Length: 368
Ligand SMILES: [Zn+2]
Image (cartoon, rainbow, N blue to C red; front, side, top):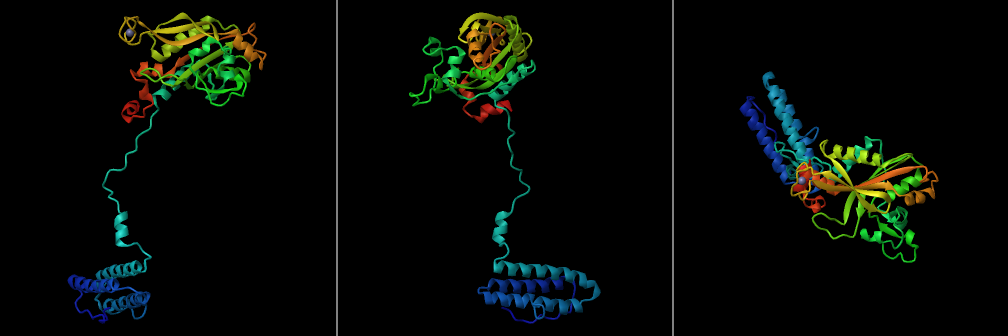
């Protein structure tokens, strides 16, 4: 360590002050660089920062007092800067302060552009599902939900698919394993349609009922361009006194116009579903060609979109086991169901159903 006494200053101009303070800083840095033991550290502190004999104290005693009035300010500025440097050298040597390297590693370039966060957006399936739900919400329907793992009773039996009935073959079902000891109606499966929620709702509340049931369903189907083992449905159920097939037609005609535009026409064809009687398939006029005939509608001008019908008396009979008000002699109702993927594919011109589930940002970002 240097032990030169602090020299007296006779010239106090800027250049002389710069030179004098630079020399002191240089000495302090050399002293700090040589520090090793705790004793040396203590000696450094005493030598530079000591209250009575410290060099900084010496500087302020000799130079500040000797300086003419106009030099006191520039001298004071340099003195304070030197003090900060010496204290930092001491802190760094004791390990209590951050090192230069640590500070450099933490430094950020504030001129760089910030991290861009992607704006989230509804998945096209969710968006379509919400659109459909909204159309019916405006007609006074509320939303019903239920479990995806269902019992055979709610998924099939109560929907008028008796055990062994061939209608069950139309829905290739994923069944939970190792349930052979349970009665058939209690066995668990992945629901093949959202219809079980119709029964669950009727068991919970007497008529009138107006609900739509959006949700995920599962079937053991091989995936191809238009099929997926998991897909989404929106089902609807309306039960009250004097509900007729005209109400069903009017409701669905309105819903299709709300979803696809006021120019869309609907037509109904006889069909079969176990839980409705009579049943119908609904076609809408082709939204691509306006009914003239094109590749999308196979030149027919019509596209088949959903199934519907009047609720079968057998279904009401199952509901009446818990809610006697579902007496088919006194009330009536209709139900309908549609595939959300199919509607989304039509609305957005998507040809591969798998695009919905692949998680490809190039596909999904089109819907932001
Ligand atoms: Zn067409």
